[in-house]
Length: 170
Length: 170
Image 1 (tube, each protein chain N blue to C red):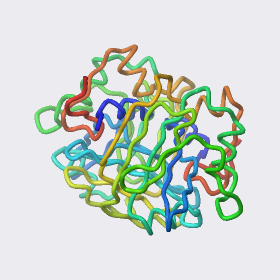
Image 2: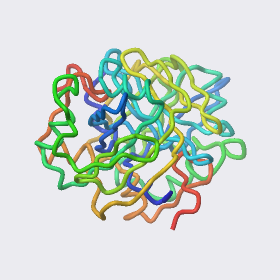
Image 3: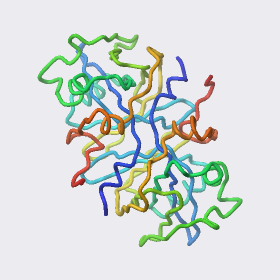
Image 4: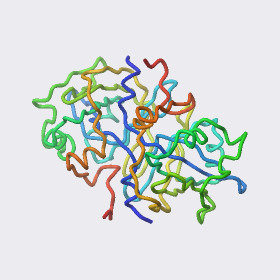
């Protein structure tokens, strides 16, 4: 079995956000996928230990910001390699609260999706949340950053808690 | 709500295959993604009306071939726009049966993953199958075809039954 094959699956670069008791949090996610077209549903895979997981479970909604290729590593690092338990990630970030109260990051964002959780599936270390799209908006034209671009051009790395972490890769 | 935002999510181009009673079938899929890293699990979204859905349910396993950018539209069309109920899709296709009996397409394939279904989640028109990776192999170096490449360079279209079909797009 060759774990390196997993490098050939294609993903994007997103910030998934949610809130609890008026507090916002968000994290980098690669696994955001449309699952059905009628109605439009999207699935996200979130590590159970992440604060965003706790917030999505509490609020029953989440937003997805689609990052453009210009998003700097430092910005990605803030949402991807730090925990909202230790610092307020939304400080100094351009964002807005949607009607549902769900926050959405607007910096380096092409567009966003807002979704209401329809069901959740236990996948061991991660939960797959299935959300129905309740809102969406174009923010700024641009090229969506792919996970490949993040690795090859931005020279970014992958935290151990990510669904796409590859153990034993060469 | 702007359905065009959905164009900004990133996907790959894959053939998901399975078997039932010695008969092989496969279909194009865009929604293949790693969900956990320990153990390695992958999720796929398959339309309930597709023959491959019936075969995966019957056999409890599936394979995923990662297509390269050279895969011609005619080849993609065979697996994406035709049903295995009317024609034998694996005829004249380079493929092999894995140890589990699961078939895998090798034409225009960079690598493949074999997975055993751990659980399935009902998502309305589609089922999300969560499979644990039981095998994987590199076949031929190449650049994985992205869904964007399929649309922009190959000028391919999306069938109505796909998870990523966008109703009312401009």
